Image (cartoon, rainbow, N blue to C red; front, side):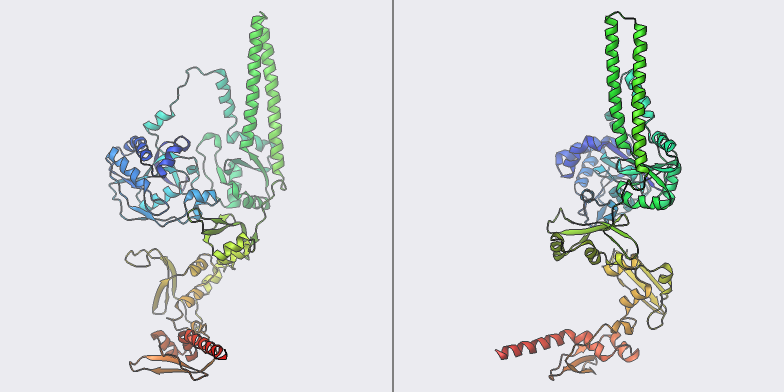
Length: 603
């Protein structure tokens, strides 16, 4: 059974047939939108038959539905189904641009927000122009949260079939049936029948069995488009070694069990398979298909020659029976010779691929202290703003989220004055830090003063009435004290990458509230201070001031409640530390003024 969430979708036609119209639709061309609405309306009527439906347009990468909303409104006029514009998202990198820059869609943070819940008695139909990877559609379906959500698009590609989270099942409409219908002859020619018989023997399962019989001790990997695939017992080995899921193929000609991974992950996965003690044979289905096509062309040419021979034989009144026997013998001999050539070519390819040294993995650009390999580290320019550059890399084959680069780093990168290691340290420091073990993380729950952390959790704020809604927050409980605050990006990365512990996070974020000495140790008083004074002012507030060596005095800063507790009650802070906290900036300015005055006097 598949763990994917199923969703029914309707599409007018495969993407290549509606490519030009889809581009016009995305550009906001009104005539293209109207034409697309005309083509999609029939399919949506069939999909909505017997249901109370609403049309939900998907927002674009700017955060709001624009051309999809116009498309939904046009479809609404033709079908009578109302449009609910209830989805939004944070601005993000366009998915098509991510693919051009060799980035996975999963590396782009895409979370859609729902403004209005769809009642159970209604069936939402999500509207988009093209179903490609299904990443955006999946995020929209998840945000809507309705169990019967459906999808309607103008065109679709085959990429959605490999979506890890969703299984998109196409509802074939009457419109698509008409487009797919092609005139066919009742009587198939002998040539067509031969091709059909040959195609049956060229299924992935047939190729796998043929290679497995010649290399029974090797693990067979077959390249098919953008993926490497393994079948049956080899699929189970790949799954166990690489910890990737298996699935049951839909077609009978694809075996009983299948495991596959993207072609660009071969550099990471192949060494793991070999280290596990496997011999690996790699076959390229595209190359084999080209050879078969060439052989088929040669066979067709020979059959045409045979037909010409038969015609000449008839004209010369040669005995038809003898001619047919000769031609049949010649064709059989020629086909047999071509089959032997093809088998030798396939066997040679498999034998070359079976050796460990045939495929040389790409060397990583660096290896972290945790043994993780960093590869494909590079900077790229934004297509929205040419002044913005982003840095990204892969860590053990997983794409990291692109980070906006500083202008000085961009200049150094273009001049080749800075490398991947330095950029990784700047933009992904927690990826390079030493990870703590689960045991170390669980054990480190005591503060520097001996108190125990009773509870610490990281959560996302969902209260829409709060200003920090949607942000990650840190909550902790120490004794009777309960505290929470928004986490910094640095602390959040350290938490998720497991390079920090509860005690470090709590002391860093709540050291002041807990009156810890470790919090006040960070404050160092500037040189040139003669005396620090703590006293009450006329309003009854405790203040801190400092007297410099030249007898000049700073202003009086009022102490906070926590600082008074740390100074007088807990005795974890000194007056010098408090003076440094409140007065260091003023002291620096006073010292600079004195230096400037001396320089002016010397002139």
